Image 1 (spheres, rainbow, N blue to C red):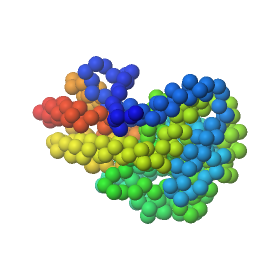
Image 2: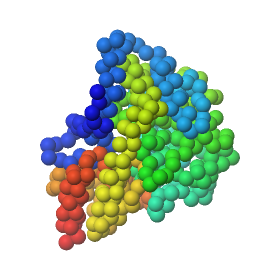
Image 3: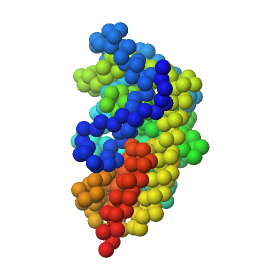
Image 4: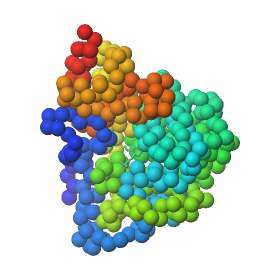
Amino acid sequence: MVLLLIERSYKHYSVKPGTIYLRGGDPNFATPAHIRDAAIKAIIEGYTHYAPSEGIPELREAIASYYSKYGINYDPDQIMVTAGGSPALHIINVSMLEPGDEVLVFDPSFSRYFGEPPTLGASVVPVPLSKQGYHLDPEDLKERVSDKSKMIVLCNPNNPTGTVYSKDELKAIADIAIDNDLVVISDEFYNEFVYDGKEHTAISSLEGMRERTFVLVGGTKMFNFTGWRLASLIIPQGYYEKVQKKTRFIGVRPATFVQRAGTEAFNAMSTKYGKKVMKAHREEYDRRRQFFCKRMDEIEGITCHTFEGAFYAYPDVSSFGVPVPKFIDELESKEGVLVGSGEGHGGVSVIGNKSMAYGHIRPALVQDVDVLEDAANRIERFTKKLIK
Ligand SMILES: Cc1ncc(COP(=O)(O)O)c(C=O)c1O
């Protein structure tokens, strides 16, 4: 019998005692009990052997069925189960990119989109999101497309700005992708965490897009099993063989009993109970963002918008004139608050202070409101001393 919809369990390896950890996107929630139970049951039942390299059939079916909520019926054979989102991104990059290719990446967005293409000889072209609310002016994308462009990387909702792209924005991105024959990565890791009655639209549901869109379907963040390493990748029909050829030797699949638990997690999303658990998580994140973003924005010298999706705040601290790495180090050593670098999640490594990510930190709202309040007070104390 499950008594609590949301349980807390936080044992993070890289946290010093007394430090408030807001660096990584690793929520303080326990994996929901029905999913943990499914993993234990799977171990007892002997699901401890090799799984097929693309994932167990029942999980691929569960993911296809979950994703049909966007009106797209994917063949489970297009779904590859991976040990988290990072390997899924790696698989796409190594399968698609050739030296000399250009990858269009919205700035700011998730760090790994910027870091990996150069290791394969490709280059990243940052496409700025507007400073006001971090949405897209399609002209900014259009004017950066060249004959070397291969791929557009979209994170929706966006880590770290929380942008939930509107249908019109997605339609504009889709038109540019189709006109220039580009593939799109749609990273939808945070699709369940959207607030203020906004709706998450899957770009693959737009006309002409399912055949050119790789979709990253969450798992790690959605069900709070970051350490279990389970996510998946939907591969557009014409690309499956190409991907398989490149990735045959990587062995990216999670443990078989983890996949059985993942099957329970995705199947539960069509039940009242599963929906209730997800809603409880969404409401808790909503409370945190309402509190923390407003509190940050009130601090002298900091501007912080209230994000629309995911669970990251994105304060601009550039007015203090302290380089972000130093700001983060000193905030940790002097006040015991560990936040992520907002500059890492953006084009600073490519275009320096012209990047929209310049001067930002990224506190992940992975702690309860009372802890966030403590963190905000410490940040305020720290920044007051910078002004003096
Ligand atoms: C948007 C996005 N995609 C992918 C990942 C990678 O996830 P994983 O931890 O499952 O490798 C993350 C992790 O923070 C993320 O925020």
